[in-house]
Image 1 (tube, one colour):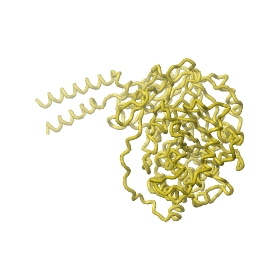
Image 2: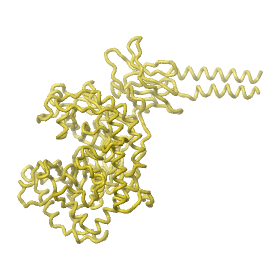
Image 3: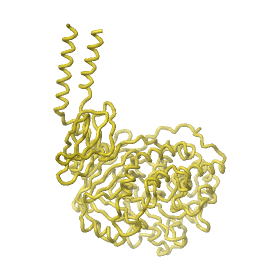
Image 4: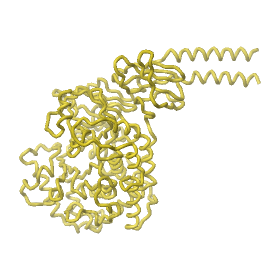
Length: 623
């Protein structure tokens, strides 16, 4: 009996010893002389400004199963409205955000339908389970000019400092450029933005990169109550194996003012094509020109129809040369030459000459990957992208490989999908054979779907995508997780007034939730249900995943802790950095690194007290 009592004492003592101090870290915006602390186990421990960024407050405090961050102002303490939970054994919280109940969420991944067609650079640019933070210091006069006149063509506002912060990483940049972005989005009070790293670093010898990117977009998503359509589709394209942009959610602050929630997304650049098509080889000799397709009206659209050799008939408003890549032969005077030649070559393709995988036909001499193209067509059809490549002849990139002279299609801009803004109520039940807009010409679509072999490949692609992930049993749990993850930031961003003249959206948190999982015709879940019901009937198959497992994928690359691109076998593909190349202020796993450097007096005190208890227990045992 004595032994059990002593054992309990020792266990109690050791539990205090083993519950090591935790490194707490939070992004917060105290004002004036206010500070930030963490309240745990009835004790308030002051946090210090991190050397990584002045809006990160960190420090060590005892472990507690629940805790809160607190704004301190003398004797006054303003706690968060939420109480956080800490898992046993955790030694670092990572970088959290003040007044958000949780940082990392369990978001179900989309099962992979096909392995990636192209060797892709995988990075944390594509995150689905947390919201990062971007903090910028921008020239106030230039910023105000953009806010007041978003349609005016202005020089980029100088971003003297930019910090990207997620739960594990902090990257800092200087002298970037900021400008308004998009077309119709400029009609809203909340603007979308474009970031060009190193815009004002005139003498830099090495590029500043964020996850291998030199340019980025901050998409305001003002037409989408859910804020999730575009992100979901980009994830679907990746899960289908297509070449695609990446995106993740971020909250943005400029000059200590909240600008709201945005979708941080890729923008076209040579680096983007290197990342998406060439595994992050930033010196790839293959990366040629990239055109951006656009539509102004049903009569003026980037439909890729050949209209003769006259370059003036291929308007830059419809086919914009978005990036020259490594092609030094392209100039302002001949910028439309290559897109004209593409349309001409497309018009000369014999769509009947493809018979099987070994005989892919003359289209395979023009299009680098027919399968990638069919994946994009399949996803565009399934989601009802009425503003996209197939239906509207808009919102796509067409990139040429400089070595093979073949072209790759990448579609983008998916906020108006899953019934959002759609005028044709039957779009989610129409067959793919009748999906094109009446009277429209789509030569890059018909060259595939009018061929018996490629039509079969397309239908198999549709079936595989539906069986793997495009169905309620897979999509709805993901939407439910996002509903929980984003609701606090949705409430926050909808309360921020717009800074530009234009339409102020009136979406609410209820609109957000209904748009994800409601019963309306524009709810994502309802669209998926109806689309799956109709297509399984039309093509006579079941959405049950009875497919064989995919073979292991080893062709991709990733970024190491220093920002270098590394292949699956460990070899270095490209050298680079995350943040400014000088390395000043860049930190990977910042919170963990910081926690390893400090030990608090509280932990020493607890260890000493535990030792005394153990010693007393030993004395009792001998008695």
